[in-house]
Image 1 (cartoon, rainbow over the protein chains, first blue to last red):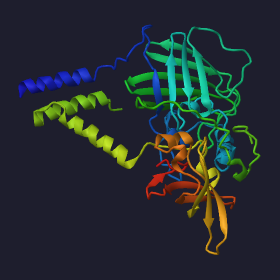
Image 2: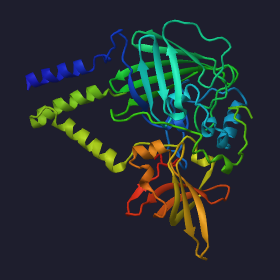
Image 3: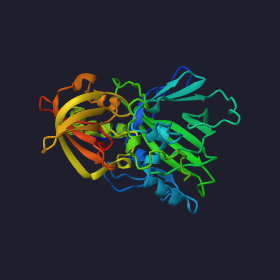
Length: 255
Length: 155
């Protein structure tokens, strides 16, 4: 048995060493492929939630603060609860873009492409395109959009993306949690296995939250036969006429 | 978090010690996992909007009728169905399913439903009381009962 035990020790030691990601010719890790959140828990609610009809129970994806709760300023959680009771206001339900960070964990796949000066994230839902320059260029001036303006840089094998210019209308999930005007996000992407891309987003939004918070959602590589498909959101959108407030303005957390 | 590579290595060594075959246990773990995926059809699907925004989980309805039209599109496909009421009157229902993309990945195609097909749909009514519903399963003319990949189909 002694040789077998030696083999066990050797295998365990080698298996526990740091994961070495596949690399592109430029030396950076290769994130290319089709990805999707490992679970849909964050899409439903970034906080811990019990099961309700159409929504399975799930844990919080908030890793900071440690309690797993969004650090809303006084009065802001009431707005989120009000959103939750009026989900027809969800911008995504009206075919608008998800906004960052929600765009990274929708219930549809996304594709990552890299070419050295850019990382591009194509999201199936709403045909989202995030073009993330990694060549050090400055942010756009006075820009405002659902997914904002992203600038990336590499810290070792981690892609760090700063996002500014968010329009402040985005929700964080289907449960009505939201970000408001002036939100900025710092995202971190890192391969932890060849099929797992760990995604973290640190959100700062002093108008809504008392302190920054961070969500962490593992993305799972989809099988090789999965391709992004067209998602013309307007064509089949026939729900609005049946919603409780069909003309509810899309204004994120604002009532 | 457990590293799959570590688990794999340990399973292989364990298999070698127990069976003499290096990775037999791991192969069975993978086989059983794949089987569970197919049998349970657990690939999660959810719509772009919340089920609760429009539909009432307290109002289930079984619609047995004839397909008038099937619009295979995003963000939801729609089945238009003529259903005969007990009093003999025919009522047209609009039944929402998941997106074309979710349905396509589950094997649905544009021609999966044709005008004149007789189908049975398990669904939930819209809160506004109209003849609108969100489908959970559809029983096809050939008897197969298939998921509608709808906004509630996320369990």
